[in-house]
Image 1 (cartoon, rainbow, N blue to C red):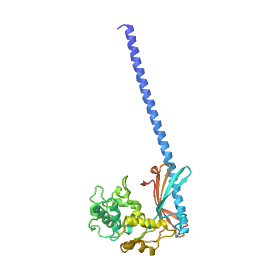
Image 2 (image 1 turned 180 degrees about the vertical axis):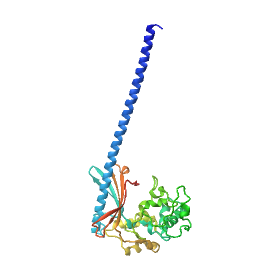
Image 3 (image 1 turned 120 degrees about the vertical axis):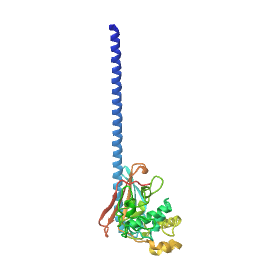
Image 4 (image 1 turned 135 degrees about the vertical axis):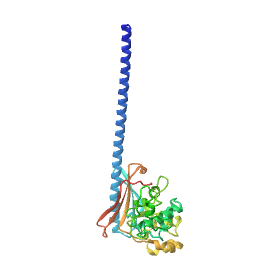
Amino acid sequence: MSAPGRSAGSRGIALLMVLWVITILMVIVFSFSALARTETNAALGFREMLEKRNLAEAAIERGIMEIIYRGRKPNDMTAEVWRIDGTRYRMTIGDGNASIGITDESGKLDINMLSDASGIILKNLLVTRGVAEEQADTIVDSLLDWKDSGDSDAHRLRGAETDYYMTLPHPYAAKNANFDTVEELLLVKGMTSDILFGDRERKGIEGLLTVHAKTDKININAAPRDLLAALPGMDAGLADTFVAERRSRETLLTEADLPVLFGGAYAMASPYVSTGDSDTFTIESSGYKEREQAAYSIRATVMFSPDMGRYRYVYYKNPVWVMQ
């Protein structure tokens, strides 16, 4: 081959190598740019999450203050005093926003106090949330079996004891003692996370249950509308009437008001209701910048001393998903 031919071939190879080097450098530059953009977006997202969490935590403290203030005026239900039935209150904090709901634990269904008779309330609640009646019976019977201290092999008609749980892929024994948390219900036969916590289509029942009320009755001054509707003899219409009556009053409902409000349902519902408050409250707060649907939410349960001078947290979940 002549020298000019070899020279042209060398130039072609050199040009090809230069093109490869340029291509590799471009890939490196684009990769670095994408990585930097990803890290920047992650940092901005983390900062926004911290801001919304701080807003939610500030709202929890505001909720505690409102509970203490309410304790100074126990029978006052004017606009100055926040309601303890889960009503949401919204406020601006700095350049952010927050919403808060407070529920007296006496207005929830205490699963540790549930009995064969009051189990009908839980069943009604499950059915209204779309759970099949047979599965609802299984959950109620299994819940009662889980916390009773009876024979570990004897169970209710649709319930379950240790012999059932030991056949599961990850076996465990029935507790035969009270629940420590509502989340413990996930260990009970028939219960699922969608039923307990809800999904994008329906609300869960977690927010209507408690282990802190220490009573087998439900405080109708604090009970959420859906729990009122699950009481024996009640329906959605009567529950709406109760909620409307509560909101129109400047004082709490008393025992004397119940026969009138319940009407013909009083005989069936009266064994399961009361008008007495407790010393334990759940505060659910959400912090957000613009859209409440993108909020960061916290749920805290706080127990107060009789004089409302001291309090302690008995439950704190951070973050928690809340269906707005």
